[in-house]
Length: 222
Image 1 (cartoon, rainbow, N blue to C red):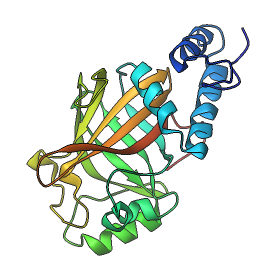
Image 2: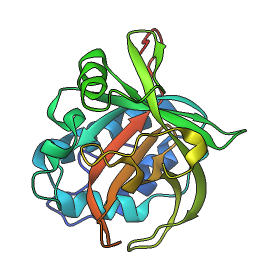
Image 3: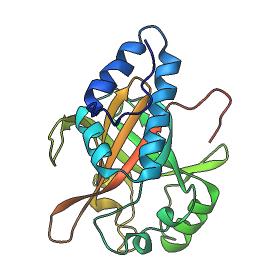
Image 4: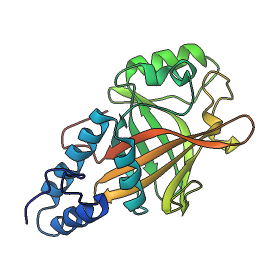
């Protein structure tokens, strides 16, 4: 089997069909399938192809997540004017570098590089939830569980929320983490697409962008 050259091609192939090919490839060449899928997500990110990202998310399945995952913001954040001013992390590259999951407890945390940690420490000085790990920090803990997506296409996802008071997250107008809901699907084993959503003060939930995750490469520490 050949690896598809793109998840959306001039021939009109549907992303779901091409994902099926990559998923089939994982049976015989899982590393090649993961790499090809990751490259396609990077291409969609560079083009800020929201229609393609929407289609990929709709074709995803609910994953089982445990351990540390590398992460990148995919495409441009959208939906909320001035969002970069609300959250210093999105204005720093790479800033957010992934998530960590504990399947047994249904909890996890976001992983940040040093510049993002310093920026957030300055704007939420009262937050004491930081944990040093390798070259970065973990913080802004969450709970996660498999459930139906709130927004269309309402597929099964891993839902990540930050509202449990036991997590110790800050309540801040500058970093409104308690109003964030992330939803994550698996594209192929080892590659995941997440949809970031923000709840308005009026209670309306809006998609504000996408992110991608994958298991860290050997020898990479964050």
